[in-house]
Length: 114
Ligand code: SF4
Ligand code: SF4
Image (cartoon, rainbow, N blue to C red; front, side, top):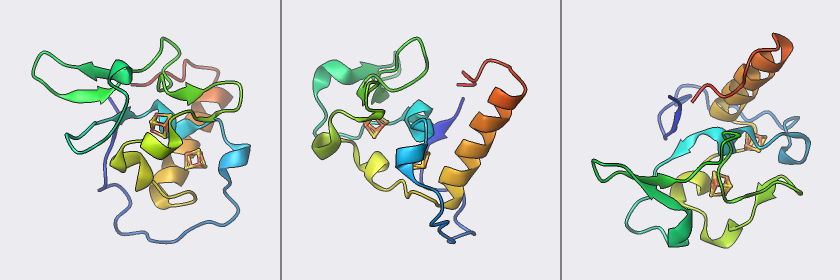
C-alpha cells in the first residue's frame, strides 16, 4: 500500500520544472492520504479505519474521492489536508509516483497498486 508521507525522496531535493500537474493524471491523488486532527477536510470525504486512522476516502478507481475527475484536480483545494499541501510538483516523490504509474500503464497491468 502506498501512503502519502513526507519521507520519500528526502535525499533528492531537485525539482523537475518539466513536470506539470496540468499534464498528469493526478497520480499523487491515488496515494493514501492520512487526515490529521488539525486538517479541515469535509468529514463525508474521510474514512476511519477500525484502529482509528483517518484517511481521505478513495473511489473504486483508486483515486481520492475529492478529485474532480472532469478537470483532474482537487475539488477541495482550499481545504485539502496538509499532507497534500506539502506534495511538491516535480519533486522526487512526484516523479517516482508518476514513473510507477506510467510503468503500470506501459505493461498494461492494473494501476491500482494500493
Ligand atoms: S504533484 Fe506530481 S503526481 Fe501530483 S498531479 Fe502534480 S505532477 Fe502529478
Ligand atoms: S484531498 Fe485533493 S489533493 Fe489531496 S489527494 Fe484528495 S484530491 Fe488530491
